Length: 214
Image 1 (tube, rainbow, N blue to C red):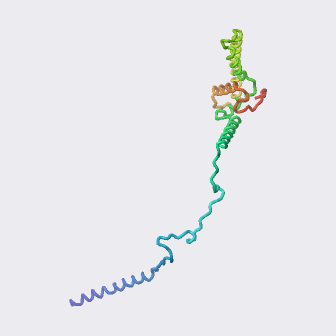
Image 2: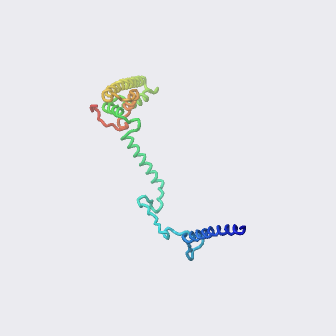
Image 3: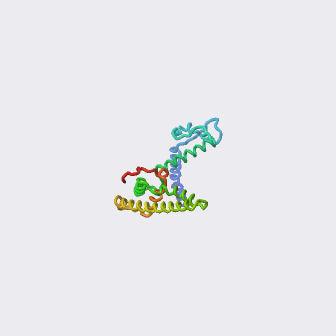
């Protein structure tokens, strides 16, 4: 009886050993064996190209390509001429459109009011030059007196003209732009500074003629 037990234990272990071998044999039979043979005449660390892998590199559009050759550097005369043209274009644009301070319908209305009339301010700088020359101590007393009278008349004319321009601008702005947020004091100063500038030197250029109805 004692000798039978070891035999039973041994027989009990036999099937499990057979099953393990069969499972191992099945897994080894089903798994594919991949053998990769290195191509002949290739050095170690060789990387296949895209052409060998069948990958095509997309072509870049030709519109955005730069010319093959480098641009020819400009000479001093050409660079100077280029800068001169750029300044002329900027000045012409400013003369035509003006700057940021000239934007807005109220500013356009103020310019039209000034440009539609003759202003005393356009003679102010010319008269100031005459007064400066006539007020010299080397001049006779009569000439100095006349120069002072001319200076006073010009100053008075500019003040009266500025008051009339400001009143007309105030009236037209209230009629045409009742909800305007433009500060009237700034608008008056803008119009007065334009009125004492020569007509040909005003920017933006006048859009109305003298005597036109605003």
